Image 1 (tube, rainbow, N blue to C red):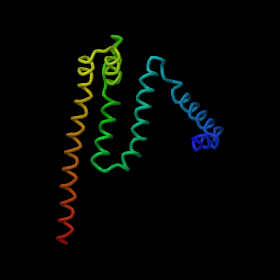
Image 2 (tube, one colour):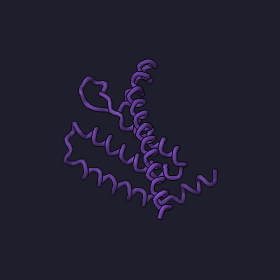
Image 3 (tube, rainbow, N blue to C red):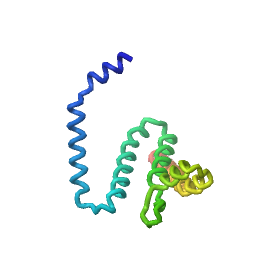
Length: 149
């Protein structure tokens, strides 16, 4: 546990505080013209895009099929739309409906709410498979063309 105490002692808290302050100012300038009713949706989309961009750095370290599948799973969980539970026709992430139904101890409702996420994941896997096949065919054609010359 000494390493943890040393880590906390050596953290540049002033630098971290300055960075967080700058990010807060940048975010507040970015959303100052957004109407109040659109702010949650803007924050959701912005944070989802930030998470997906940061996940690209993690995915690059993983083996090719696992990284792509992990990224597709994150996209399907974060970006699958659904209606809000309030009855208004606002969009919300489908995972919020799944979490709500789990917390309300409604497992069948959670499964039903998870179906759009599963459908998006399957479509993304299909698109990824087609992309992988086309890429393989194009690379193979280029290799054969290079061997002929």
